[in-house]
Image 1 (cartoon, one colour):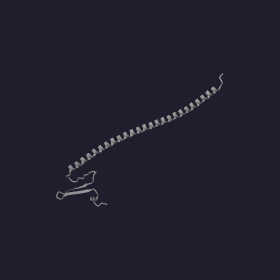
Image 2: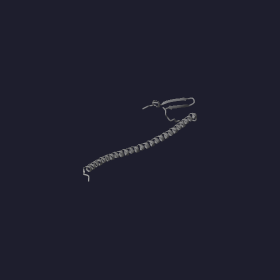
Image 3: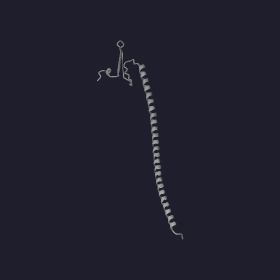
Image 4: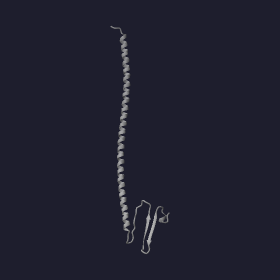
Length: 140
């Protein structure tokens, strides 16, 4: 366990003071990204530096707003792509059903054609049989 703040990896600490003026400043610099804070004691705050921190906060809010807008846009794009993919999948399924229906109809048609050819062959055989019978009978 670290014994001092200086022992924490990535943390930098600095201090300056003026004994005669009875003033001092300690700075703790964490690695980025970090959120800044200020503890002002006494009657002479460094308002210039505090204002600079406010600017950072404004920039962070602007960045956050921009990131939220980008996230919203990307979510919208993803939703549109998902909707399109769902529609395409539905179209593919409908086409597959049409193909299957066509193949079923084609198979039924082939079966009917085969039966008709068989019926034609039987009818031709019957006609030949009738011709033979008529030709064998004596003429009246």
